[in-house]
Length: 306
Image (cartoon, rainbow, N blue to C red):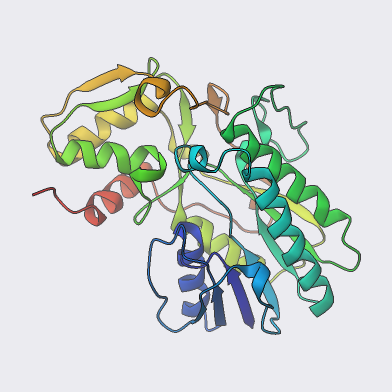
């Protein structure tokens, strides 16, 4: 296939692009290079611009990854996050409909807010307050819904759960690379709250494989959770695993996101967040990478501080 990947130089997009190339597809990446984690994708055509300023290069399919991400990075885009997500997604959707190209839309598990169920048919319950993090969730919900109102568009929505792995950056507030960098520097690992929050971390490699496989199957306007329930752990346990894996002398510092990142920082997820992936399993999805695999891969990618 000829596949266009928006945001293809970003964390998820770069792995998706590489997986598609590995499978023999012809890939065009469109990326404005504001959140890129790589400068190029070997074997891909890279178009360096905002997707709204170009066309999709007559693709057979589109994977839409472009969006602001990261609890900390979103703070710097407050009051514009929802508009940008909706505007870009609408633009991509209408181009796909015009080209008769099916669309894989990368949404987020944060659309569930504090629902606690995490099944695709679950109600999406976002709190009635304002924050950059909630702007992101609302924007992704709106992005999913506007696809249904786009005539002639064949699409699937994918809701990834706590995706992590190499190339993810601590600068945007992601927990695993933050812990790894702190451990390698033998400084305290900053755990927010009491660390009892439960998350099921998903390998970016597993996500990329599912997205690539999705292109080979009917879309039918469905939604899929993609995650790894077997990687369910508490944040304090994750911190200890990282300390052990790095043989670090770090301790654990229990603090809060507001102390570390400022008063505008907000959580937007429930205490326990473990996905139901039954629907993805009907498409043959079997997560491969364990939490220890992800920790090891992230450690290998992070340079030791001088």
